[in-house]
Image (cartoon, rainbow, N blue to C red; front, side):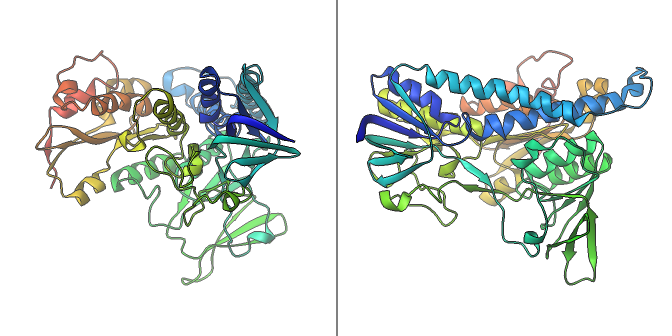
Length: 459
């Protein structure tokens, strides 16, 4: 028997539950399907658990630096990884159960726990249940990518998801991938007490960032004892007894890194393999992400793709914005679009990186006449007070309009402070608005007007 609904949502990641609430509030009979974790990646194996672990790692770091602040701790600092994991699990449990209880108690919503796949453009099967609706929203997210690498089938490996089950301290953690996810785990486990080596195929870390940002992050991590191996053009793996071996250079002799555990942090893959998109006629790109327009509609009328699966943003905040865009277009007569949003994200190493808008490299490539301001974090009183003066802040301005093009703040509170810049960008206001603002002292953000008062032409 086919169950008839006005709308079906596949997946309970960030945008799904909020969309379910809005649909049901509009009087639409709605079904939502979840095959594994209520709350999706962020709640279970992404933002929430990893940042909880980052917090534990920072506590260990500060404890080990206590004498710098005149605080004496008797005996060596010890990290209990089972308690670290238990704390993380409790935080995840609260979030996961919160999402599940919200959905199960939502009037007008039917919740299915099973794998969903399309039978045709308006029919979805979830286990033994067959459902039909005129409106279907795909919110299935993505998972860590496990590429075909020489020797990988011979060694055990971890991903960002399976790392959530680790309750011990690896002796020597090898991480393949020197980008956002890999670097957060690298610093975290080094602070827990493991030896850590990062192996990156490229010439520098976080290759999407400007070279000065990349170099500064590398210096921060190396300063904490993390070994970073770049230009690993020919990565191969093997197991020798209990050890994991990574060969990192096929041309320049026998260069190897030997460790106890291996973490793959080499990107993500959308969960479209077993969704039946071909049966529904839904187009995907070469990386298997679902193609959408700037209002998140697929090529099939009545089907939308929201969240990470559409390739328009691998972030919780962009996923939630996807919900807002869909709801505004469906119910509010407000034609919101993905092209309205400004790039923004954080790299949650410590100190963190907050990034908004264009990079310096992108501004140069655009040919736009621009101004640039840059200040080291050594100029920031808050950073000196905390004894954490690594990093810098940088901002780029359109020389003709005075509008802010982009900014990067790598330093104490950078992931929070950067929002004062982002809000001015969304207001489409000139940089003088924030330059002339009076900020509280002593804070990190008070240096933004100072930086804006010392702009120079980008050459």
